[in-house]
Length: 288
Image (tube, rainbow, N blue to C red):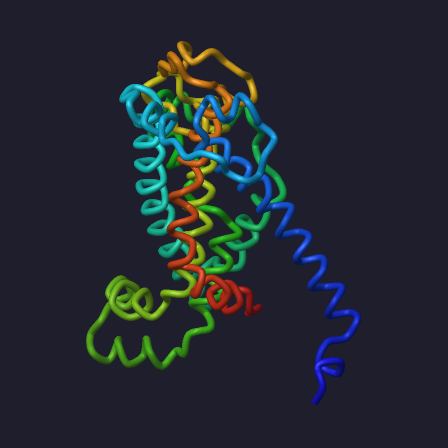
């Protein structure tokens, strides 16, 4: 079979669109990297160049040298992401496992209530009042508990559990296992794809979130990295207000270095869960 028969004009158009989309994502990222790693004197002379002409870690050393600034904000973000993902996965897996049981009393009614929350919410003011009445204001719990369970992720995991062979649980019950033992010793160990995919959803959402922190966090030392970046980039706030000293720094290069610091952890983790990603989503998307 010739190459012409393998590739149609439709295939070429799809590859062209994909390549153009990839370049639209890659070029800004590359530009950010070049600016952040350029020496200050070289950047000031020619700041519109995609080809790196120098290499400097000055802005990165400055970012991590401020213990009360970027380093502390990065630590807060890691703590929020790790704690929030753990809580979310625990609650979501417990709820999904229960809802996957066809003999659960009131199962259909509970599922309809969950679906309702995907389209309607109580609103921002009641949400804030609820968190305040729970005494979560200015604590990490305000960022990880109110949004711990996503209905979308719950449905994916419920459908995955429902697709598993019933004979697995029947054999475990013959061996004397109860439902909790079946979930943690039988179901979870064989559900790596959906756990990796849903964990990635929760982890990335918590890592990138800044809205809840701007609502509920008042102390500078509790701010996650995304709030600091937002203040620096969007509001162009002076660094003294976010507890960072950048004396002798080029602010544009310092911002780019902070953006890279915020991106790297997700880019490092994603390849390790990518092989489970498609499989987990496809299996969890099967209708009951």
